[in-house]
Each structure stands twice: as structure tokens, then as C-alpha cells.
Image (cartoon, rainbow, N blue to C red; front, side, top):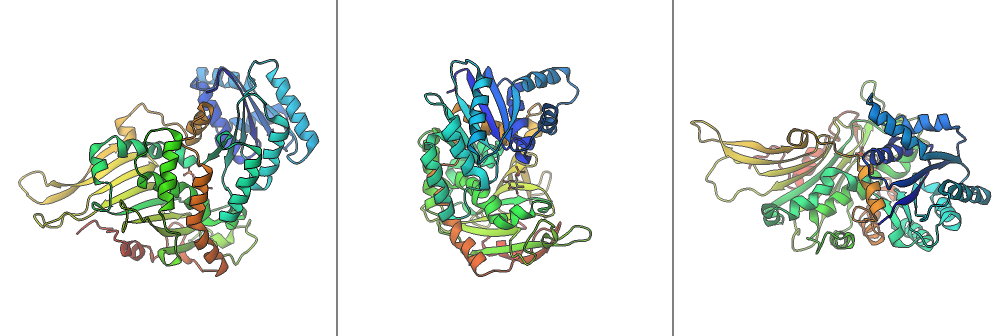
Length: 479
Ligand code: BG6
């Protein structure tokens, strides 16, 4: 636990992630009283900026409104926040930063420090070694938060892991996967293990298939340079969707302790067979009207790229609970809607007492509009005896009307301050995740597998419906 004082240094403070997520989340925590009393925040980046520029940049995405109370809080937040420019690969800059941190801290009793690295992987190691060599606070708490991508495959991830491991202890490292900070993802453990009826049906005897879907209605516009190096599989599947999958599929941890949870996640990941090309459908979006195709992105260097912007991949888990139940992960850019959800489709009801009873489905909508709903069969109200499928619906904004769901980053930064690793990726977990994905990624790249085309704004490649049906998913829900 952090007692009373902390200095938070945000590296990459002039970048996109910092302005969109890190600083607004820090302010969110501050205004709700979740930052330790004695907190100082330092933004650090290469760009030279004066105070006004810095303030303008970091407040751009904060939702302040006209409330004078919030404005007052913003002013006091800005009083504890400052900016310092310097390089990432130059000794003199690091010395300078160390001095600056000491100056800002003055004579606080506890020099606890949190280093938030909101930077691309190319400079990541420079920063980690600069921090270790110059800004590490001996005898106090030091925590370093890092963002994906953690390597590009098993080998590069291990190499990065070894390099970081030389600088920081595992319990000082917080690998962020921001999906683990999302409300509905955090709710998965509660739903599964605090309800007797979910626990009873959560297995191969009752569940036919599981689908985890990630859909975005926009393309890679402007991010093509980054995206083309990674593709949809590395961008959201090896991390976000696999994390969700492991929380759906893991056994009950012995406690809610971070290590107990992560032990179970690692265990289930190790039961997943590496993904195979024959269990995959890849897509790349093409122009639709005035919406440009992926290959038209100006930031792309390889116009002939086979990089998938859509993928459906099926994971098979070989254990007693899940043998034979396909876990279908689907993710795509430039689709018809914004939606992330988990859809658990149950088996058909035995016997034929009622005709045409569709399967039960449990849907956990992660975004937009968090919800848990269950498709159940009900007698048609009135004189009819026909069955009618209806939703048992727990839509959050309707049920919890005053609720403000915090941004995922807000929740995760609070976890870091509390020293809780439950929602962060452990080194062996990352290793297990890469083992599942590396062979198929190498095959797609090595054999230059061509993705199927789909139109910007469509549901994905035309082959998608047949693909999911092959794994038992019943789109109409009828028997
Ligand atoms: C990021 C990916 O990790 O997650 C992006 O790099 C993606 O490509 C984003 O858009 C999605 O996050 P969210 O929270 O908007 O669903």
C-alpha cells in the first residue's frame, strides 16, 4: 500500500495515449479523492512545450463542463502537475530528470514513485533503463506501468521480458491490458463464482459454444503504419480477447488474491492448443463508397500488404470442463457497428415437449452500454401456449441509473496505486498467450496468406456466417 505520498511520472506525456487516457484518468481519480493526499505528477516527453501548451494538451479530453466545483478541482490538479522535456536515450537528460523529480518532491518523507510508460516499444527499453539507472527510488516503492505491444511473438516477447527482468522485479511491473479494467470484464468473476446457477451450467455438458466478439466501425485511418506491423490478431486478440476468454474459461481461483487469479488464468491458457489456420477466417476491408479501403491508408508503406484487419479464430481448450466446446474469437475494424460482447450459447433442450425452442444464450455486453442478458424461453403471455424467446435483462444504465462507470484506465491506475496485480498480465501469462498465437501468426506471414475482402461498414467477410455455423453457432437461435 502507498502511504501518503507518491510521484507519478508519465513518459510520453505529449502523445495520444497520455492526452486521451492517462491524464484524464489521473484527473478522474484526483477529483474523486482516490489519489494519495501528497501526490505529484510529472509529464515527460521529447517535445518542448511551455506550460500553457502542456495544460491545453492534457485537458483536451477531460470532461469538465461548467460545474465550478470541477473547475476548481481541475485547477488544484494542475497545481500538482508539471511538465519536463528531455530525451529518452541520453544520459544527461536522465540526470536532469532525476534532479527535477527530487526538486519537485522537496523533502517529502517517502519517495514512492510510479512510472507510467505511455510510449511505443521502440523507446521502451531506453526508458526502462533510464528509470532504473537514474530515477529509481532506493528503499521506497517503485512501480512501472507498461503498455502493449509486449513483443511481436513468443521469441521477441521473451527477449523483452528478459531485458525488463534485469531492471525491475516482477512485482514492480504492471503490464496493462486495458480490457481488464472494463466494468463487465471485472464482473466476470463475480457473475461466475457468486451465482449458484451460473456455476452449475458452466461446462461442456451445457454450453455448446462461446463467442467473444470485438467490432469497431472505423478503420485504421492514420494508424496504418503501426497497424500494418501488428494486424488485428496482435492488436486486440492475443491480448484483449484472450484475457476475456481466460476469465470465462478458467477454474475457480482459491481466493481473489492476484496470484491465485493469475495462476488459474495461466493454467487454462496452457490447456489451449495453438491456433490453426484451418480454424481461422481472415479479412481485410476494402473501399465502400467514400470510405477508403485499408490499402488506401497513406501511412502504409507496403501497399500490397496481406495484413488482416478482421479475424475469426477458434480456440480449443483441452480440459475436462471445455473439451469439444469451441471458443470463437472474432475481431474487426471498419465493421457495421461498435460492439464488444461475450455470447455463451447453451445446448439444445433435451426432449421435444415444446416445438421450436431456440437455445438459451447468456450475453455479456462489454460495450457500448454494459449489460448482462439471458435469452430464455417463455410461454407466450395470454391464451397461447406457444413459446416465446425473451430477454432477462440487466442493462446497467437502466438498473443503476446514477452510476458513473469509470474509464478502464482509471480503474487500472487505481489498482497500481493500491499495488493490486489482479488485473495485470503476469510474465508467464504473457508467455502462454504468445504460445497460442505465434504459430498461426508466423504461418500467415510466412505463407503470405491472403485475407478475404470485406466492405468498409459491413459485417465482415461473406464467409463469416458459414464459418461460425461450422462450430455450432446457431445464428437464428432455433433448434
Ligand atoms: C487498443 C487497440 O488496444 O484497443 C486499438 O490498439 C483498439 O486498435 C482499442 O481500437 C480498443 O479499445 P476500446 O477500449 O476502445 O474498446
